Length: 252
Image 1 (cartoon, rainbow, N blue to C red):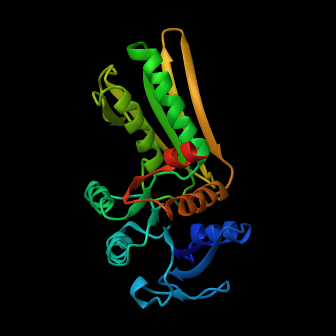
Image 2 (cartoon, one colour):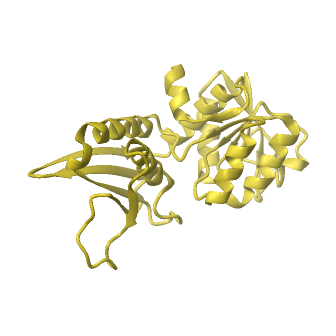
């Protein structure tokens, strides 16, 4: 049994995580952390990890980037592994995450969906095969309440493609201010915000007289919540290190 604490327990994703756990027999939610301490289930909700009496096996974080340091401090002190599913981290915060992973197990992914991570692998394969003959553009679409743009997932896809290109590509965000032809070394990244779109990510490979499109569409937030619970169960018994959904896929 994996005992889980949810940071951001009263948020939309926190509640989705709880719903997923309720349908499983291999894990349990023992506490939640949120500024809103209202209870909606059979576990206590605290304002801070330092107030908590329970000792979890894993923390799942769906709170806010500003909460990262307090979470990492708690995990370093207690040795508790953490699943970081929040988006919008700065480069400095990502550096901190990598540093902490040398001492405790840290599961960090911009997107917890198994399908998205398959899309990343397919995009890398396509990039390797198509070489420099195709231009690459990434289009992401989300609901009108999403704050960060482009999405962390779009950047995750771009970074994976760039690694295949020996990190020689540069990212171009939108093109309204650029009065010049597209350069071969570009990866275009575009954000769309509207309605209640959960998440759509498209990778477009445009060549001479042909195009190839890889697309992933999420119909609900359940796919992300389920993925984070899978990650929590996986990382519970891991050695210190930085893990992502690729490790879960390989372990399946």
